[in-house]
Length: 111
Length: 117
Image (cartoon, rainbow over all chains, first blue to last red; front, side, top):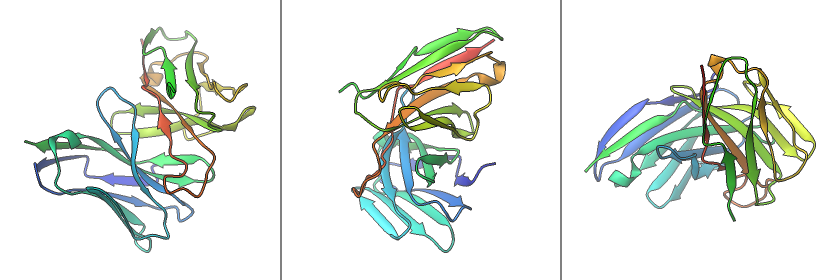
């Protein structure tokens, strides 16, 4: 049972454009929402994360927007670059250390 | 620090064979976990451990065993491999939760690609 729904499955953006990936969750007990970036042949790496008491978190070109009432959160990549081409996963933490991941979004940024 | 290491990188098994995927971390992290990654399914938690001697099941534990005798090591055992266990397996570790902003950051290993024929 998938508790974190991620969309879109794939995304193509022009260089300099904004990439937006969305996630929705059901379990209101989730208390931490990270985004991971994964390059081919590598393990995922933490990109940015947010707690549910914050509505927005920005780190460089990456921003998480969090809507607690709608149970949705999204990743925005500003000024997207070809080097951002990767697969992005949202996740939600349940309990001390149990994470539920979204199904992933394959982003391609065209030069 | 080597971070999280996994061996082997690739493995091919026949149905019914057993094997152990190795995972080690040198960051003195308390939390460790195993995930499998399948196309269109994201990462799914198999088992996790919150410290030496303590393990628990994740979303998809059937067919897998784990143990945690030391802080550093967290091996994953396939008792009788099945084609449905063909996947890429990732081990991850994390420090105990703290007040830092990137708290509970999980560090992933490079993965093991397993094929069961």
